Length: 242
Image (cartoon, rainbow, N blue to C red; front, side):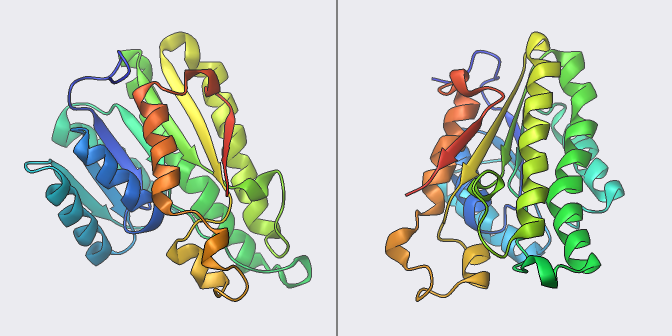
């Protein structure tokens, strides 16, 4: 069963769709009949995700857009091109992110800019562009992927944790402003997930695989939010950890 506000074949934007949680979410939503817009910075990775989606469900409609969400023009264009291609937008899943590993004393202007432009501004550009469409249709679902580190900071992630804490706040604001208009907002806050992003910063010696969860575990929660199985968590942060 799906949420009553969703059509039979919802149109869903997934950022960070080239790997990890974004890819796992895309494949799961493909099996449920979603029409997908895959967004990421590397076209070849999006191609691979698209292939997995069509393998999971024959005839799955997939549009993939490669670019930098820190560029407001590209981010706004993602929403515009989605509505142009499919006539509507039902779900926005913000999975894209970077996690620069830098303790406070090594946090430079460049580290701060990367974290906030990619993690915070990119999501904000998409939400604000999609909002008038959701508001006009009096329906829409936003699922933001943050981090356990926004409330339980990991050492060495001063900028990352703060940039993701803003995502938690975006979710609360979207709930307060949108719930009377039928707009649903959720935030999923994973701990250590076995993704390329994790392995970019930590070897298996530092964070062994037995201490991590697969990206599919987070994707399951995201799908539950979209489908209407986590309605009590609207506007809240949902922790997913081992």
